[in-house]
Image (spheres, rainbow, N blue to C red):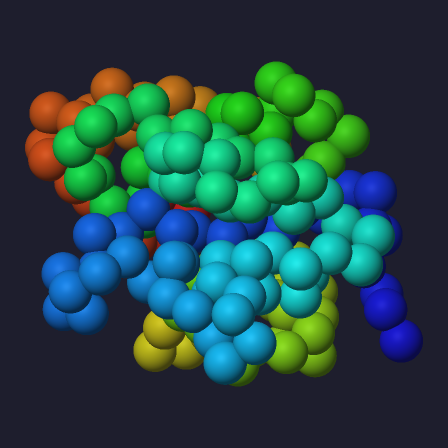
Length: 168
């Protein structure tokens, strides 16, 4: 059973990494059916949820919203999350919850997401893995995001674990 109120949940695919270990952009890797990994991930979660990608500079995927990188330097997934949450609050005020999934987590299933969604805390993630992460879009979360929006570029990045510590 889908216990998610689809009108209030967004799913963000984090696709802004430099993929330095892989040598090329992970999101543009082609699957055997010629679909890119990013296209696969976006279409996988498009049931009735708002699905968008973060960190894709050029809108490679038509029909999906893209939160543009506001910085040309690679500032990591937390900066993408922060920009996305601020964007969601402004552009989609009905959305109260967002799950952020790295583009290369193609094996994640809806049951896993369901477990995250039911976590009562503002932030939900699996033990031992800070991503994927469920974030409730609250005033508290948004104030942390506004603070980090200016702080992360100065620091040159920010770890997901440090982001989570703001809500412990």
